[in-house]
Length: 70
Image 1: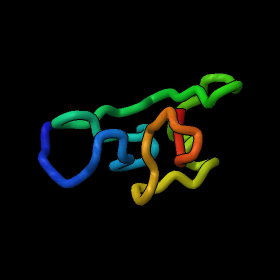
Image 2: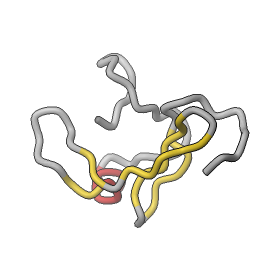
Image 3: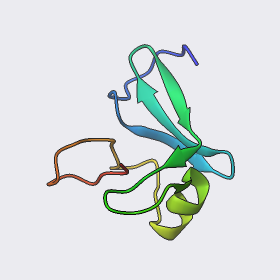
Image 4: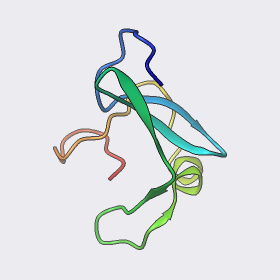
C-alpha cells in the first residue's frame, strides 16, 4: 500500500480476518502472524480479536509503556 495519509509509522490501520495492517514508511505492512513476548506465535487476526485491537490508539512499539502488539 502506498497511500499517503496522516497515520504515524507503527499505527494500526486495520485489523480483520486477514491480519493486522500497520503503517510503515510511505505504505503499510500486513501482519499475518504475531508473537507476543513470552508467548507462542499466533495468527494476527486471532490476536486482534482476543485483545480487542482497533485502529484507534494502537501502535507497534518496543516501549512497554504503550499499547503494543509485539
